[in-house]
Length: 80
Image (cartoon, rainbow, N blue to C red):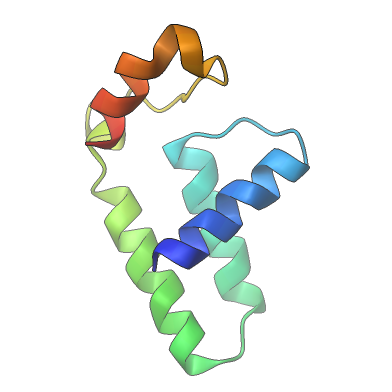
């Protein structure tokens, strides 16, 4: 599951797109539509469910800034 989340994040970064809970879930849904391997589909579905339960989404605080030095505390708070 963590691997497919990482793949989604890297794909977003490669395309210079915002990285947020919403964009990660959207990318995972795109990956799910294209995936044919049942085991991998299950991992993607698990990743979507896990990501949708993120405190960032619940708090509606979905944007993860790229300036890690300035925002490290916020990023850690959002993901832990």
